[in-house]
Every structure is written in C-alpha cells, then in structure tokens.
Length: 136
Ligand SMILES: CC(C)(COP(=O)(O)OP(=O)(O)OC[C@H]1O[C@@H](n2cnc3c(N)ncnc32)[C@H](O)[C@@H]1OP(=O)(O)O)[C@@H](O)C(=O)NCCC(=O)NCCS
Image (cartoon, rainbow, N blue to C red; front, side, top):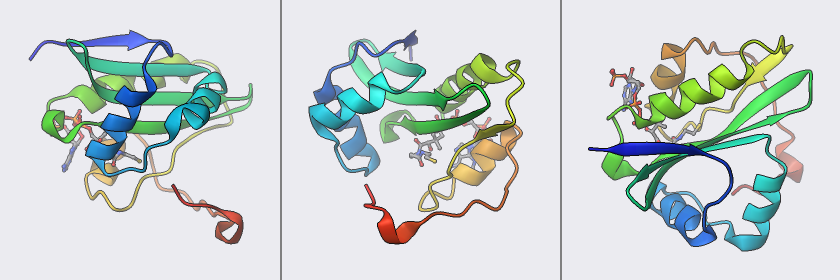
C-alpha cells in the first residue's frame, strides 16, 4: 500500500465526513469543519491516492496543546498509518516546552490505550463538565 501524507486543510468536507462515518463518528458538515480546521494550528492527513484514510490535528496556545481527531479508516488500520500521523503531531510540538501535551482517548476503542502508550502517553486524571456538553 502506497500511503502519502500531507499537511494543511485542503480537504473536502465530504471526504472528512465519509471517513468519520466509516470510523463510526458523527459527520460534522461544512460549517463545523471549517471552524474546527481554521482554529487548529496543524492538520495532518493520510491518503491512498485521492482517498482520505487518516487524520490528526493540533490545537495549541503557546503553553499547552491538545491532539484531536486522530482516526484511521477501518480498512487501513493496523498498518502504521495512525503511528505516522501521531509521530508527526508529536514532532511538531515536542521541542516547544509545553506545560501540557494531551489528548482524550476515545474509550469505545480498546486499541487506543495501547496505541497512545506506545508513544509515551501516560494516563492522568482528566475531568469534563459533561452536563454542558453536546457529545459528537
Ligand atoms: C487508534 C488508531 C488511530 C490506531 O491507528 P492505526 O493506524 O490502526 O495504528 P498503527 O497501525 O499505526 O499502530 C501503531 C501501534 O499502536 C498499537 N495498536 C494499534 N492498534 C491496536 C490494536 N487494535 N490493539 C492493540 N494495539 C494496537 C500497536 O502497538 C501498534 O504497533 P504494532 O502494529 O507494531 O503492534 C485506529 O485504531 C483508529 O483510527 N481507531 C478508530 C478511531 C479512534 O479510536 N481514534 C482515536 C481517538 S482518541
């Protein structure tokens, strides 16, 4: 398999939402994707030809940063695509001296904890104000 990777937000909403649906996540639509991507400092994608097969993005504020939307199409999982995307995100921030480099591990996927631990992530005590949240 010849996967290529690219940086930047030049991706069609339909491709993003198709990938989201394949993973089992709720499609976001143009307006939300536009806002999400414009507020991200880095967006990285994996491609099989013209087919979008993986994503990852960073949100940062100079002191802290979060990784979001790390996802690989089920047809392409366990072939190193997620690792390449996560490595790229880590490389972008590892030397910036941040007080926090964090992510939320989606609990419905048992692969997540071993995947992130392999790259050095450790569990901490995050909390969320769920009563005001609208889950995706
Ligand atoms: C989590 C996810 C991004 C991993 O991507 P991937 O391309 O399949 O992962 P890789 O092939 O690069 O795997 C890298 C390493 O992670 C670990 N890993 C990945 N999938 C795993 C699984 N199902 N079980 C156990 N370990 C796993 C392994 O250590 C693996 O290395 P190895 O294959 O040499 O053993 C992918 O499973 C995914 O998109 N899942 C659905 C969406 C999701 O849950 N995203 C995370 C949101 S927090």
